[in-house]
Length: 276
View 1 (cartoon, rainbow, N blue to C red):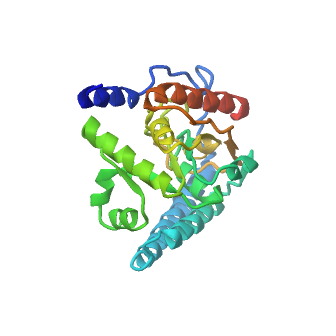
View 2 (view 1 turned 120 degrees about the horizontal axis):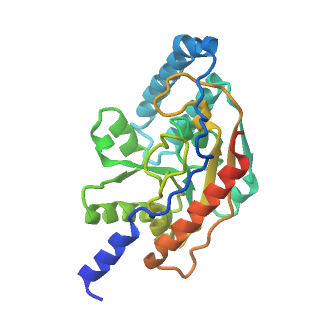
């Protein structure tokens, strides 16, 4: 196979799966507004506290970044920031299948993406240091870019297929160094609470690094803070850890099949545990 043909084949593995089903029943409206008093409590107190906590912990993290090249201290600060946000939002988190988080030292953890609160939930509750993938454009933003660079996060450049492949290979390098990756294969928050089509980049990286792909299903974060809503609606939250999906012996041509297994696992789990 020529290098050009191999590149085209890899490009095909990184397109969204055509299948897209809903994680909630048609016509269901899980984003009901919080009660009037709770909305104003959010506007006047909770949301400002979230902003202050984010700014405060961000400054501390940047300061640590001056000497912490490993990212460990910055990850610890992100963990404290995330726990603080959950306290402010009055939303306790329970993990179902916690034991599966300790079966593999390194893996790709792929989660559904429902809310801005998804990232704090994962940083607060996953019991290990990990790295995330973020758009390369964020590296150009003052403070945010400095934090991402110094804490060892992985930039993703989507300008072309070749640059995307190079970005994913940086993720593979991170995995081979022994650090897990946590990412959202849908690429963005679900506007309606429905599970969206998934990009196969997470499967590609798991296969290339020969590490398991582990589904994470978040429950309740959409109802806590849906997209385009700016008031918190406190509630208990769940992280459901799925069975690891093995990649041993697979090659990048199997990325779509692996992504479909991931999609099916998260979809079934969400439908099992989703709020009524």
